[in-house]
Length: 226
Ligand code: FPP
Image (cartoon, rainbow, N blue to C red; front, side, top):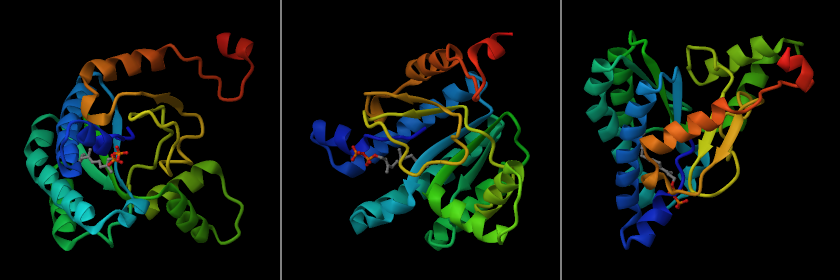
């Protein structure tokens, strides 16, 4: 999920950008619950890209506080619902208090298996690919091996799986450095609604749309049909 449009939604409603992110958090909660009901295996929420550090300091600080509050607030509910919560991305630049909370929530929910919720924070697919490529040292390796290296650079202990579906709200049609390697054959869905307006019905619609897609992975249509 590329959760775009909090700022524009807030401006359109005469609210501050922070209020937009608060509304975005409420949507994130609703979508996590809906995804569990829809039997999604792994849900990745793109919360903060490495390029988002360039935003005004006040907005970045407010977002880091919101992430910490969200993690603390959701830990118990994740545990009760069998949701494993981890973050994806660089950890070394996060505020120490957030890192500590992340460590706690990750250990608390480590044995949950109903759904894996990954929150991408300080995440850049290109930086992750560069770091994984540095570990290859000129060797020729398989796609599978590279996928594992990629997961390791972001401490994602489940090897990054192929992404099935990317949903981006907010009307823009781009990936913005999100899971570029893992999205090689992902189905893409761009939604006009701003993230705070997206709801469980929209998720169900997105999943129905996904199920209607014809995924060929480079094969000819008749090969897939047989
Ligand atoms: C993009 O909207 C949204 C963000 C950069 C922040 C996303 C964070 C949340 C939705 C809170 C969820 C938190 C957790 C822990 C899951 P934007 O600010 O780029 O909107 P704009 O394009 O309209 O300006």
